[in-house]
Image (cartoon, rainbow, N blue to C red; front, side, top):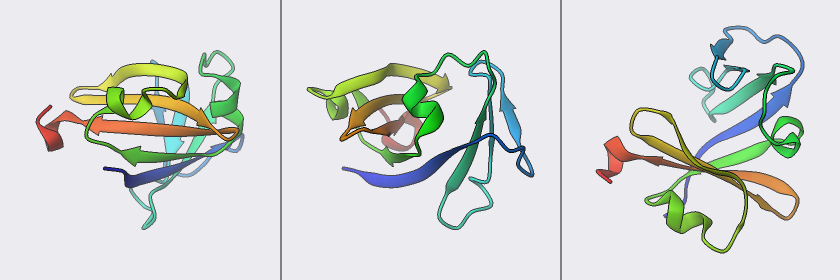
Length: 109
């Protein structure tokens, strides 16, 4: 199952309502306010995410199983848990970053 989750767009501009994700050194905003779940992402210089994620917009999909979704793909960010009960990973597809999100609370996995 692939279910649209959000569109992440890198920016260098400070955006209204930004929230700082200290462990990633990223400012995020807009997701909750946008009917289409568009999320603005502003990266601090010390952010260690791959350059492709910091410079090219990414689309994110909710999946039942992140590990299964990335099998055989070009993985650019290994599966990790950014918050309790959530597993994410990024792949590169046709030159663009794609994020997969598994919410264990929703799927019980």
